[in-house]
Image (tube, rainbow over all chains, first blue to last red; front, side):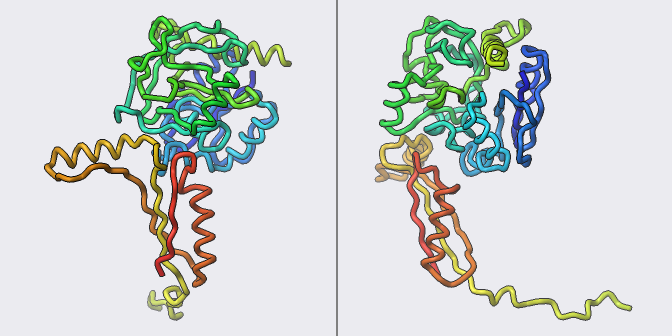
Length: 233
Length: 98
């Protein structure tokens, strides 16, 4: 797996992501600065990490989404390249038009930093092949704007095309407003694009991959990507 | 030699035609505005009575070169569509002030 992590000013989760990618794939990712016009040759996974690109000025992810490297990411995704956006990365993918909808201020107006439970809706994507459909995983979130919303037609389409991949749930997989921490519509925590090669999610799977953290539920997302790419090669 | 520049500084910059404009970005009707709600609650607790609803938004004051208002308006719309507003959740209004 030859991955690339895109780095914007104000991003602060890129090293967590790089550490995880190296740990799981055995190969350190290329760190690509936002001003670059191209991704390294042979890149087969692009990751947009979390943080506060451009200090969340204007709207979360809005400025980063319009930086030079994003044209290359757009072209990469259009060719079917696997693209993962986590937290601010999800916001950036939405602002860049690679995923529909927008992440609004959390319903309770608070920055939420805690472990959450996610119901994995599908196992037949390159991102979730390491999980079983319906499985519940535990991963952390850390965001102030994770309240996903889109117009009714878009939501109906996402649901109809089974493009909601992760939902906030109770530990036993119940979708319940009490476990939908940020108020996202339909408890949406992660979605894929129409083609299925771009995933955006608010939680941080890269932070639950080592036993020292107590939970390693995020591991299978990355291991699944390694498998998917090995199989495609 | 003194340090004084023998050439008169170019002072034509302020004579170039320019216009002032304003772009106002607001949340679309029906989009939940938790910040507006919080402001509304704060006004109530401050004893500012009679406020029934608050929706917050953004104002951009922009200076544009040239003197053609129609051109300026087109430019502002482009700026709003490309960056200033996220039209999934926001509406915008442009006005050329002068």
